[in-house]
Length: 443
Figure (cartoon, helix red, strand yellow):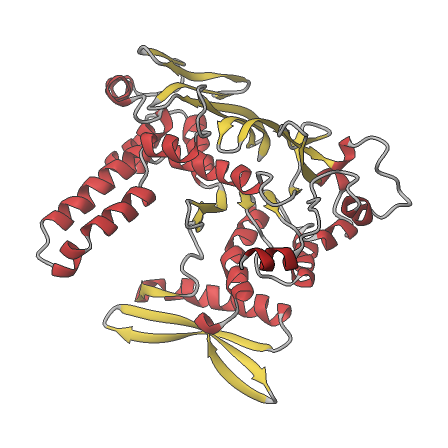
C-alpha cells in the first residue's frame, strides 16, 4: 500500500508531497482525488505508471532490439512501408530512461526529477527513491526490512558509488555477476530494472533462490501495482499490474485456458447483470480451431421487449470503460494497490456511486482514484479519504484531505455543497464568456 509520495520536477508537479496515512500507522485503503481540470490529477496518477516503467527499461530495450531486428529482416512490404510508424509506436511502448525523462521531466526545469514513494508491504515499511537528471539516473535507493526491521537495502549514486546490504543476496557468485552488470549498466537502467531483466533472462526461480525474499517481494509488489493512466499526447490509456482477466473484450487462447475464460464469463455476467437493468446475460462467442479458441464478448440485452445479442464493441464509451476498470477493482479487493485515473470517464454518476458503494467495504488492498463525480461526497466514504488539489495564486500545488481544512468540516453541513462553494478549493472559477462577441470577431 502507498503511504506517501513525493514528486519533484515531474510534469506539472514541481514540488508535491502527499500523505495517505491514517492513524495506527496504516495507509488509507480508499482515496478519492478531486481538482479542477489541469490541476495535475492525471499527472499524479501517471507517476505510478512511470515508477513501473523505470523497472522495465532494460527488458524493454532488449525487446525493442529483437522486434526491430525482425522488422529489418522482414520482406513484408506493409511492414517496410510503415517502419517509421512502427518504430515510433515501439519507442512509446518500450521506453528507456532517456525517453522516460523526456516524457515526464518538467519542461525547462534545470533541477533533477525525483520520485520518492513510501510503502507498507507485508506490514513492513519501505521507501524507494529514484532521481534523474536530463539524461540518466543519478541516485537510487531502497530502504526495506530484509529480516525484521527496516534498513538500507541499496544505495547507488552517479560516480560508481554502489552500496549494497550484505544480506540482500544469498549467493556470492550471483551477487558478483550482478554487481558487474550494475557497474556497466546502472544509470541507463535502474537497479530494479536490471534485477527484473535478470529474472526474465535467467528464470524466476533461479534469481529468487539467490536473492533475499524481501528484495524479490518488493520488486514483485512494484510491478503488480495496477495503474490505469493516460499516457502521452494522444492520451493512450495504459494498464499495468494485471496477470489475470486481461483481454476481456476479445482475443485468442489455448484450449487449456478455457476454464479461465469460463471464469471471466461468469464474473462478467454477475457484474453487468447487476449493474444494468437491460443486460440479461453476458457470454463469449467462441470459435474453435485446433487447440485454439478465438473469443468475443457479447451482451444479451432487452430492447423493446426483444432479447438481442449485442457485440460488446458496439457498447457505449462508459460501458467499455467499466469493462476496463473491472479487473482492477477486483484485484484491489484481492489485496493489490490500484490507481485509476478518471474512474468516471463516460460513466453515469449514479453508476459510479453504486460501484464504489459496493466495493468500499471489500477492499483488502488500496484503491486510489481521480474523479469529478461530486455525488460521491454525499456518501459515507470517510472524509479523510477525500483529497483535493489546491492551487494558489503563484501556481503552487497542494493535494490535501478535506479534513485538513480546519473549521470547514462541520457535521451538520453537506460536504458536497461546501466543495461546490469552493470551501476546499479544487473547483474552476471561470468568468462568463460572451459568445456573441466571439462570433462577431469572426467577421
